[in-house]
Length: 90
Image 1 (spheres, helix red, strand yellow):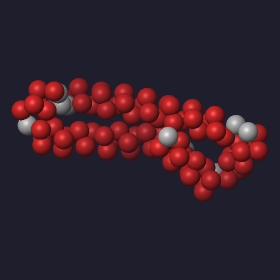
Image 2 (cartoon, rainbow, N blue to C red; image 1 turned 90 degrees about the vertical axis):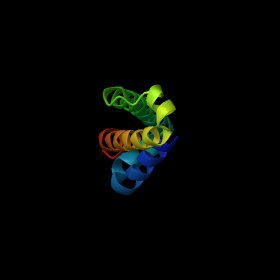
Image 3 (cartoon, rainbow, N blue to C red; image 1 turned 90 degrees about the horizontal axis):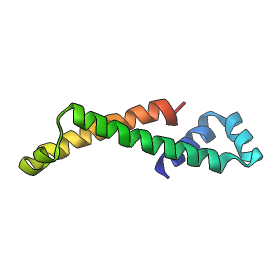
């Protein structure tokens, strides 16, 4: 997935020893799949929690779709930054 690919790129460029160890032990694919699953779950949870906390609801979507899109894009962007900093680029 997208998250696994980002982490793979990060490992390959910045954590070469870890990358080489995982690659030679045959655990790289399962490790990346696990990171991808964790990141996807974390991202979904964060988006849901932030949307609820900020009052971004289906009602807002129905009454002011452009406002809803803008606020959801902002929430998704912030959630992506959190996932990147806590799971992907560490």
